[in-house]
Structure formats: C-alpha cells, structure tokens
Image 1 (cartoon, rainbow, N blue to C red):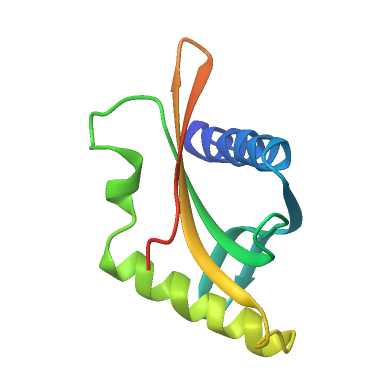
Image 2 (image 1 turned 90 degrees about the vertical axis):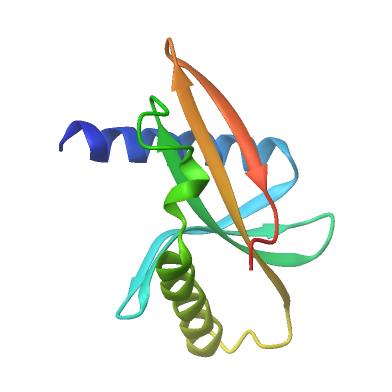
Length: 119
C-alpha cells in the first residue's frame, strides 16, 4: 500500500473509533458500487438515522482543508452511491443524512472535525 492509501485507512480507523465513542453503530465500511464508494455507513443511535460518511484525511493543508476535496462531483457520486445502497437493501423507510469527517494528522495526533448533513 502507498502512503496515501495507508493515511486514508488510518483516517477511517480514527473516524470509526470517534463514531463509536459518540453513540454510532458502524454498519459497513468501504461500500463500493458502480455509482461510487461510501467510506463508512453508520447508525446514529441517538437520532435513529442512517448516516453515510465520507472521510477525508490530511497531514498538511498544502492542498486545502480535507472538506475541500468533497467537491460537487464527489458529492454527486456519493449521493448516487447512497441511493443505490438504500435501493439494494430496501431501506427507504429510514431517515438518512450524509456527513464528512475531516481527520487532520499532525505529529501523530489526529484532529477530528465532524461536518453533519453536507447535502
């Protein structure tokens, strides 16, 4: 695996730990389909919502903040992948939302910013 892939996986692991600590149940990781990929699918137990989460991890701000990478094109693919997931598992009756978790790693210490309801 390359550094970028390892950093991304590490960020997803950190995001999962953060979610578990904040009353979320992880349903699935790295769901992939023709329409796109969803990093984490979790249930927000306190609000009874199914949450689709895009995780962006950075070690510097050289190319902007992590959320800047979730541009309109990425949002479109993420939304279509979410629609397919709901269709595939017949989950139309659930409340859903799409979040982004930014993970910034500095000196081996992660900083987390959870941005809720991006779409």
